[in-house]
Length: 201
Image (cartoon, rainbow, N blue to C red; front, side, top):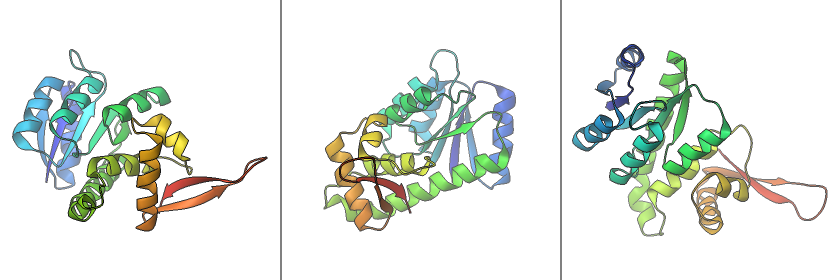
C-alpha cells in the first residue's frame, strides 16, 4: 500500500511520513506539486496527500494535474483554511477529502483508512457498474462528498458543490439508493411537497 505525500515543508512531510509508517503504509515523498504529479505517474500510489499552500503549483493546481492522469485515486488535501469556498473549489478539481492542519495522527489515519476503503469497494464494483453506465469516478466523487457532510443534502446542494449536472447526480443517487449505499430522507418545508435529501448509510 503506497501513499504519496506532496508537501513543501520538510518538517510537516516528516511528521506525516512517521504517521503513515506507524500505520504500516509505505510512503513516497514529493516537495513540489510538479514532482508529486511525476511521482504519481511513476508509482501509481493508492492514495495521495496534497498540501494546499505550496510555491509554484499549489494544491489546487496539483490536484487538477493529478486528475488528468488518474481519475480515481483518492486525494486528501492538507490545509489550515476551513472556508467552504476553498473546499468547494477543491471538490470541483477532484479532491475527495480534507485534513486540517495542524495534523493530528488519529484523524489523518482514520481519513486515509476511510478513503482507501471507499476506493477498494469502488474498484471491486467497477465491473458491475460498467454495464449500467455508472462511471466509477463520478460515483466515488458523489459518495465521498456525502461522507464529509454532517447533514443530509438535496440533489441541488450536491450539484452546486460538484461539477456534475442535476440529472447525473439524481441518476447516481437513485442507483446508490437501490444498492443500499445511501439513505433517502424526506425533508418537509413550510409549503409544497417534501424534498428528498441523501446521506451515506
